[in-house]
View 1 (cartoon, rainbow, N blue to C red):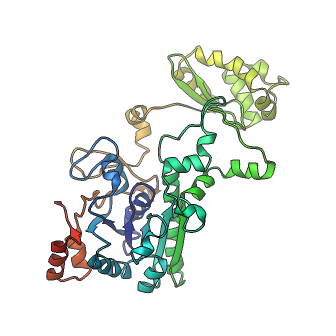
View 2 (view 1 turned 90 degrees about the vertical axis):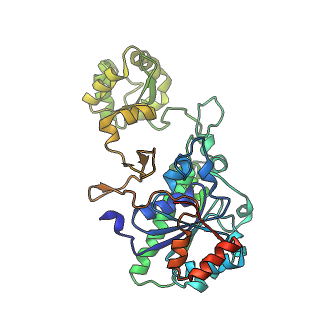
View 3 (view 1 turned 30 degrees about the horizontal axis):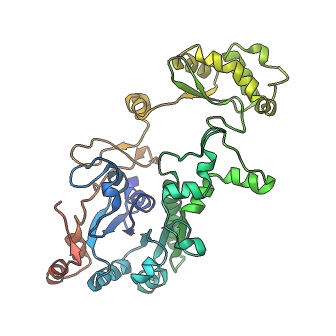
Length: 401
């Protein structure tokens, strides 16, 4: 089955928050043996938001930490370093998102890990990468949306810059980290030795999302402007208010689609209008076009317009809330909604990969802090006496399962 493909791969997850944990979770969904190393203070995402579920934590933590076992460890202690060295020596992948320089102080930077394990795939996720003047600065998704210019591209033309309301940059960085790790693992499978040193920066991930816009700037020297809900390259293309206060979106990609759009809107007389005949003309005369179609959209409901537009094969859709999605059985059934195996939580969002007809599921529910410490230390072949010593000294800790 799909979720067992990486079953021979061990991943050491030394991350908190979003980007690193999500990358490790994706690998865990694919079957990897993921060991989350967690300090006594815990991953800050356990307390993010307002809710806490079971003995695990917030929806934030639950979503980003399934299919992992949790090793509660003080990695700064002498014995903690010994445990980490043994863990790294037996792992295939190490992922961290500490600030650059922190892993070196812990004795676990790339060169130190490679000395322990010459074939280790070592992946760091940071704000600005591991080198250069910016590498010393802390970062988060919000900060990176700002520095990268994402916020400068979001919002109305005459309004302030806006933040995308979810961790867009973190999630993108996580996916790039997984791609790079899988590439390195494939390299090992193909006979390449020496592991890999992977450096994923949130800054580069953010810019990759805007590759077309940034390339256009590099070529033309023109800074892109905010266009609100309108697509700057197409017209009509954007959000339109309909009767009842809701909105629908429409996107006319080709001039042949324009003809279909005119028919659907009973605007056949505009089909060859010299102001609107081509997309270039429509973009240039967007205001005049919107003055015609906006009152039309306001005259009928979203259901009415979606039925007419879809019948003419025009790209369109409602602007949904999460409630709309969850209550639309036909739509929700196409999503990877999975049971996290936590009391009181029936469904969470999985990863959007359908492999041989199935989405990935949950083999290991999101762990409590330190839940698997004894089990993992025993797998690392520490004796019972040694393990009890780690607990007495505070090097290791556990939580009730």
